[in-house]
Length: 81
Image 1 (spheres, rainbow, N blue to C red):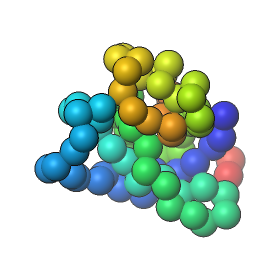
Image 2: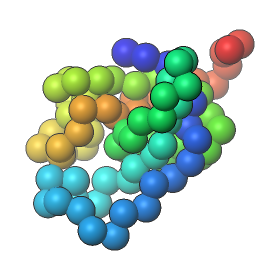
Image 3: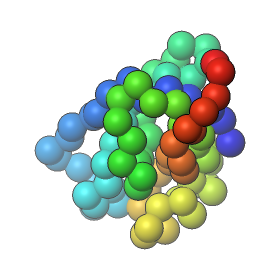
């Protein structure tokens, strides 16, 4: 798992079937790299989150057949970055 910050929403009107209607967020990791994650939690921009990466990221989605390798697992309520 990694801690990342949500930078914003990513809106895609055309998607592969494996992404269905998953919400997408742009995240920034500790090196400043921007990544795209599925978001089953509903996180607003600016919040810190913890994520699951790799094949285990699918297990954090309501539908484990969703094609993802980065998923937001929860919102961090209190953390000093």
